[in-house]
Image (cartoon, rainbow, N blue to C red):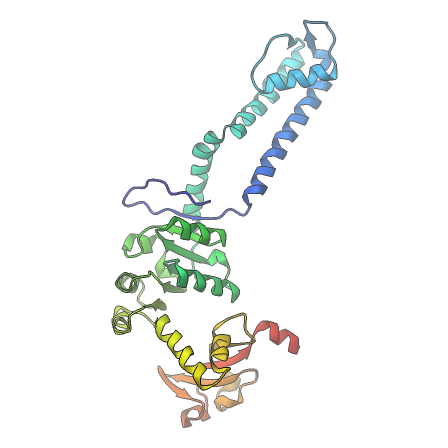
Length: 348
């Protein structure tokens, strides 16, 4: 679970969910306690000749269990004591470290504030050092969470996604997916530098407010001039401002919904097919790539696997019906329609 703690103005806290779920961590600790206890009882039973019972002079298995428990918990009533040198040495060198482990395991506060914080800080520094070719998502509201879900569904590992937000609930959900999370302000240079924005593969900005999203885009573009940045804006008037701020792709969810609604009036299946293209869970998908050497000179309509719908040459788009698409050139970027991996597997 993500827990907010007070932090200084210049502290950036990054973390990622541990590989073990909570129940597994609890089970691991319980198994460790039981294992240590059984190990200690077994050795005490083996060393029982070196123990003395001041009550009746006889050491039974129940006495060994009793002595182990009071010894582990540092109670020590003195009715059963080690008398042989080898038994005392065993108690000093073996039981004492086990006793310390028991204290650390059972005292949750000591575990949380002594070990866990140090471990989290080490993991955070290690995570920051290894960040490369990742996707930064600024804002984990409805659009941001949907984008992350789709990225994961399309094959991007959750470990390669860094989510920046200030909402505890949002960060907790992102962490549950396996993403690295940052509780900070994405408009600040220090925040984006902490997630190594200059080494990122792409950035998605969905801050919920157009002005905040545009400011985040400006900050990111300043730090990473060549980074592909996709931004969601709600007001059509802000689309131009978003592009001027450096956004590579500007998405207006309201306008896109309007397009789907308008398309649905022209046919029952148009909006369904558009949604199918946009989702990884559909039957078909849109793919963008650079032409191969074997495809150069061929028309866009002659692709081996997919259906070519558009070619980008020197940043200018051309449709499959235009003369420029009759012969593909080296460096051309094509957009094609492909079956999804599931459907491709069915086709063999």
